[in-house]
Image (cartoon, rainbow, N blue to C red; front, top):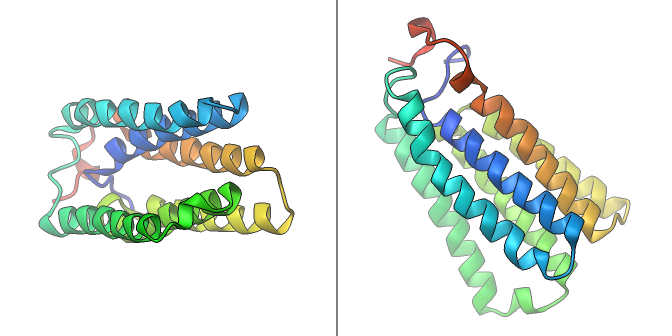
Length: 175
């Protein structure tokens, strides 16, 4: 599988690009834009997934049951952590700390998504965790933390979605 395109990879890539653009726009605009940038990125990302599935149909094979389990398992675990922290009042505290924790949880759930979307998700998780540690260690501004996170998601998303732009090649499709 090391030279193949994972069936869920392109759609996940488009989703990441949308989320990253929402994060960068929200952090760059600041203020109330934080409320709309991330949700706007989610909506755009969810709208792109059916497009990616349509474009990828027949080119990269069908996702396996294990890939679906990894995808849904990662999302459910992420949601359970957020709900637990939210019910405990964690996110009412210091906004920057809460955002840093949230970005870290998202990065960690990408480790599990490696088994649904391929090795680029693991690379993204490592890059995001390193960025968060660097931004935290250097005491970068909240906007810089979020913009850096968004830029990484955009870059990795573009890499993951790139196979949609290439010519179909049955040699790279998964069995």
